[in-house]
Image (spheres, helix red, strand yellow):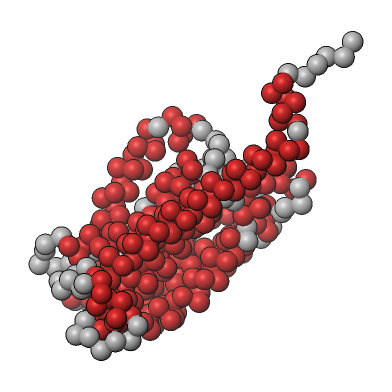
Length: 358
């Protein structure tokens, strides 16, 4: 006697049903990306118009087209580089956060678990400490990326005999703690209070006093790093099923970890060099996008980029409209949002025990 399958099972095994399901999911992701892009475009325009001097949108468009209005210098020399960097840095942090969570299958992970942000910050702070560079100097880019790259090389050397995701994470946490100790020592032994104040302000993260040169120098590294991470999407999806399953599907966990570490080193190093340390964006952005992506580790990458860019751009607008003697660092705003968000995730049963891939 042949047992008849339930109607639901018949539908789920029907190729046409599966095709419609995939098409619907693709349309939902496309719609989500379009909405996030529109929100980001609105915030970018608001960022260009907002500041001590409000710029009407008509004059804003004229200035961007190369007009000679009285607002052209404000827009092109001050606010345009700041807005572009807030988008680039936020997108890189959001993508790195989603990659770290997908790679480790841990919804509480962020890019700092690889030690790259701490190493990048230490490389830049050493230049500031010894007086070899100023806080808005392009030389910080080389030192920051170099610090992240050295951290990556040391991690690979430490785990070269037994390469695994766990070994890489443990080595990254150890080196990150060491770099954090180096940062604390630099602050404690700072030769003068002005240098210490400059280091502290830079570590809090800011897009102020940046020029198009910073955008030109950092954008290629950020774009390359993001491209590397986006190319890991299918591997992240396979790893969400377990390392053995990923290997059976033709994806190497060690090579995926290696590629992800390179992408994070490039993006985090370049972002830290031009903006300083901005925390919690890599943690918040993936969680804001995940409910709309069914937890798919590959589908969540682009929405996390857009969500990260929205967070940093919105935070940069906030610091300019809050009345204060000195401008509040962007990292302070993201920390005020991110710390309660993190506590919510820790106390949430879904965050602690739920599956990353839904």
